[in-house]
Image (tube, rainbow, N blue to C red; front, side):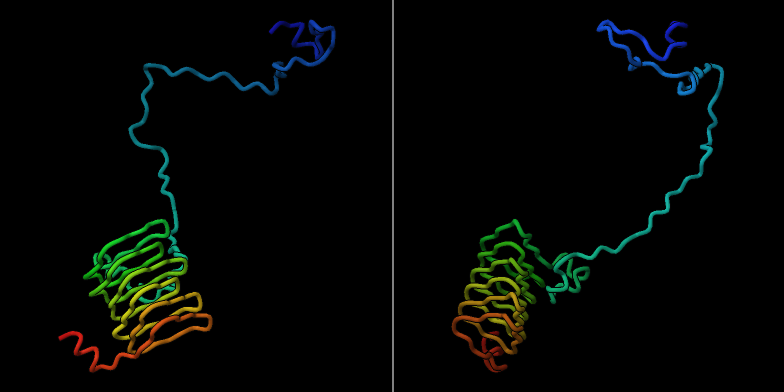
Length: 191
């Protein structure tokens, strides 16, 4: 810059108005020049900093897992469980599964399943013969729980229901034919 601009705070622009130049920097705000790298200088092979990030591990709380009673041992059943996510729809037959968790929509015949969990917002349509069932969403069809049937306050079941023991939370709804399976009925169905 010229000496005149450096010594002056104001300059006259082409429009005839006076004001500060937008690009003008006072000497105290100017950064020192960067020194160029010399070809003869060598960098050290060792890093001068021994920085090791200390990031604590967190255990993440997955929402709605406390509602699904049968999924408490997810680590143990990792290859023997099926989780149908909220945006997923499945049609067909499902068998030989320890835990079936329905968060989306399932239209199927389910057999040889230990635990059926229909999560809040989940929809199941079809036939299911399971050991234990926990319903917190909607179930339409035929359901046989050879051990226990638990219906949450948000659970709705309609159709033909058979169970050995039942638990219904206040607000849970059952519509249709309901019957209790005795141990004799359960043994004769297996034979």
